[in-house]
Image 1 (cartoon, rainbow, N blue to C red):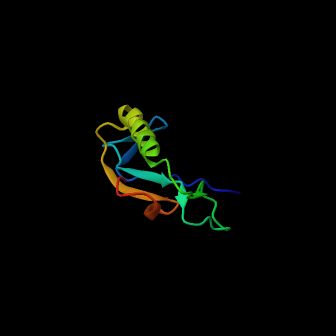
Image 2 (spheres, rainbow, N blue to C red; image 1 turned 30 degrees about the vertical axis):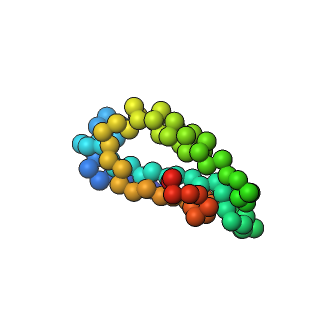
Image 3 (cartoon, one colour; image 1 turned 90 degrees about the horizontal axis):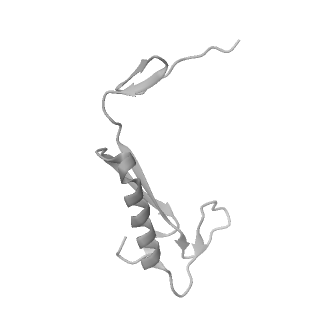
Length: 96
């Protein structure tokens, strides 16, 4: 018979079946770069071979809009790590 082992997050307590944190846990931010120098056959990321021009300004504007719309959900929480991945970050200019 399977046994249930309760797991609690560090700094959290269980009250009436609801997990409550004494303080908000830190966040991790992932920034996806959708362009690559070449598309690798084994890659499952949503990425595409970079053409002659990349709509980088439009993409950065969309990222900023997305982050700003999420601010009310995460206000006051610390970002502990930032991951940049998906494609080849070197395909982008220094704007990122």
